[in-house]
Length: 242
Image (tube, rainbow, N blue to C red; front, top):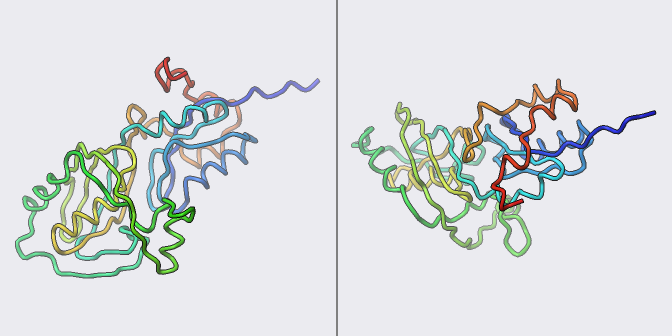
């Protein structure tokens, strides 16, 4: 007599590697463990690494709550070059010399100007849709359309390393923030341009990258191993959400 395998319902924290999409990770989990319902609570660009919240089984019903949580990132940037995608995956569209007086103090001062509430215009190379068509598909065809600015909040934007023209940063922000566009805008304010060269999501509210499993670890897990890693739904959201 075959005993049915208990369903996998809960939240799985995954450390996404660079070079793959969030959808690739979802598809891999769905295929590897035969789970019909797998979702995520906020995507990461292919260039980015770090914390990805996967929702398995019944946990897909709480995606709206988890997507709204604040996030923290660490990353790197290059000053003096702007790209069409605002990161190193794109084509360089402009190169300018760095201001002669640019130093650590001036860079930190300019970064502080981004703290607080603001409106941010999504980049053309994004999954946002215009009349039902993803912007990135239009961008690849050389098209550019007006995009509605979105309200965001930046609670921290710190310089963590500097070796001009390169630097490192940490940012804490609200949902919907395009960190690569934040770096692009920083470069525009400095008059020399900039683009993001690396990004790693380290936390989403109380969920941390230290508790995430890698894709290599997942490939060596069975259903029981995955179940032990799942965060129960009731622990992930307040009781009034359930």
